[in-house]
Length: 295
Ligand code: NAP
Image 1 (tube, protein in one colour):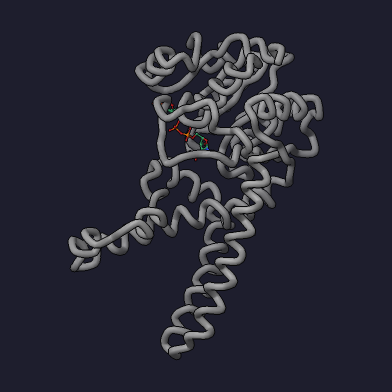
Image 2 (spheres, rainbow, N blue to C red; image 1 turned 180 degrees about the vertical axis):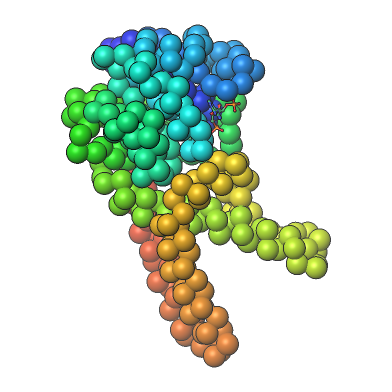
């Protein structure tokens, strides 16, 4: 592919921003990558790993880059937008990778005075439980999806540029309303993370925890893998999407109530019915995932 982005600025060079830069480099879709962040050591490591070419302040990068991708934790988005306010170049498009969208749009509105037409809110549905530039790898977005949540004021040309960027990184792009995104992601991503954290935390406080962890096997490891994710990042995601997430947790509690009732009533058939339904749905989900990867 010919170079489509002359200068890309990645603000927050960790798993998400670093992987995007590596994927675009591999695709030949970017000429130069500018890195911005908080700690100089992180940016230096990103340079050693070949993720970025140079570093700048956030305001300098916003003025110099064709595309700016903000990949900092959700709690830091507002501060980053404030640092670039008034500095964004006339042809520059800004997007982000935050896992909750209504909160990021509110941060942009507060920092810029209104939601700007050149700002395209986005969220790649890809990740691992690892963080930082060392965790970045170019295949992260291959066959994955990215959700863009443009507002009514968003310039369609800006959306097209961001779409082309993610497609060059190997992802498929869909657009949806920000509130709908937040409801869907509360159920499919934020709820499972909270469940994994809560399960490990609960068991760790039971009296016989030493024995519990000693005999825990593959199922426990699979179910709780995502409890190894960065606690500060997930604190921010849960806070940013707390309305939809608490609604999803309440719905889940009612499912747990049903399981308890069937156990207490020794309703084996009822329990098996739940498990059958769940296994069938999971198989459908895996087929869907395979189909998406193959296409
Ligand atoms: P990460 O690996 O921890 O990277 C975040 C980067 O932001 C780090 O390089 C960090 O550098 C920098 N940073 C932190 N606070 C900053 C600040 N105040 N100003 C500037 N830079 C700052 O996290 P990530 O997994 O890439 O996540 C980044 C974003 O993507 C988050 O908004 C998250 O919600 C979203 N997201 C994550 C996933 C996932 O599965 N991980 C998936 C989709 C979307 P320092 O070393 O300097 O702190």
